[in-house]
Amino acid sequence: MLAQHDELNPLQAAEARFDLAAEALNLDEGLCKILRTPTREVIVHIPVELDDGRLEVFTGYRVQHSIARGPAKGGIRYAPDVTLDEVRALASWMTWKCAVVNIPYGGGKGGVICDPSILSQRELERITRRYTAEMMDVIGPESDVPAPDLGTNQQTMAWIMDTYSMHKRHTVTAVVTGKPLDLGGSRGRTEATGRGCLIVTLEALKKLGLDPKQARVVVQGFGNVGGQSASLMSKAGLKVVAIVEWDGAVYNAKGLDIAALLKHRNETGSIVDFEGGENIDKDEAMYLECDVLVPAAKENVISSANAHKIRAKIITEGANGPTTALADPVLKAKGIFVIPDILANAGGVTVSYFEWVQDRQGYFWNEQLVNERLEELMVASFRDVVNYAEKHGVDNRTAAYMLAIDRVAFTIKLRGLYA
Ligand code: GLU
Image (cartoon, rainbow, N blue to C red; front, side, top):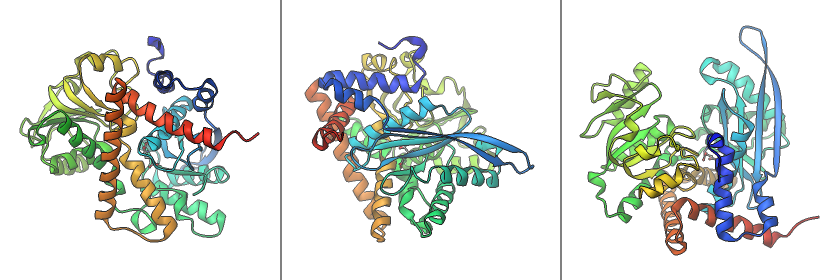
């Protein structure tokens, strides 16, 4: 069992879940070794000139956890606290996520240790282009396809696409996903993770016999995933009663007007002091009694230190790794229906897959088609996971891991070992 002092290391969390599922599957020892270890890890130290003329060296990572089912797939994170272990964990979660929704990808993740909040656009562009140049032999439409994650966005993807294309001497749109629409992006990609969260939440409410129109939702995090989840959930008629951010929390028992709150945040830089709600204690807001809690920011917000305080019926994990492995049994004992990250937030990579398919065909779909196909895939995956959990008497997270590991292991067995 995981020791307390390791609880907040995401790699330990990922490995603990893997081990639990692998044991339940009675997975062959050799396969366990293969699946526990990343296929490839690249570390680069990139010199970049800052706007004031100083030189700085940034450290960047790209980890390909698995390429058994297809190209490595996963975002690139820019944050001051990125670590190799975190990127390794996130890369393995991408492998399992892609397998849960059954799309033909492996898993990968990248990261650069930097603080985007204090870097100019020009500095971010130089970091991105140099990182891409260093990764030329690693990334590619057939080998490893990055996407946005924390601290990166459509613009970052445009720079990567351009740098890669300049080196190749022709435009290669499919090297990244989450691009701007005009550069080969997909309709519906920006909303996709939030839309996926909505789709699985509606399925869970149905499963528990709860009326969506009466459902009270608390969303932690108001970035792309939290903002889109809140917005789409409130449009679908759920009551988003609280939003919790790092600098404050707002509450309205009748449901917040999310469009107005987004406008307020964009104008003032914060969600606090919003006219359409009251400020509440940000450290307590996550423990409000509610039907759905959506942790949609970073890792480790639900741990053994606070899991007992959660009063939600459903947790929809919009973020990657918001719950530590030691919190899992606490949530289970409380009877909370957890929709695990590798299922709940898979809408993003699913529409990334649609984007890659459209780029490779050079034929683009309308938004309705994207959304219909996303819904079809998310609903089917939700049912696969829940049925698996019921059949095998395990919780949803273990079921999702078992399903995913089984699919990847099957591919490896079928391909055989090249020696
Ligand atoms: N960064 C997102 C995730 O963690 C999206 C990855 C992708 O679209 O490749 O799922």
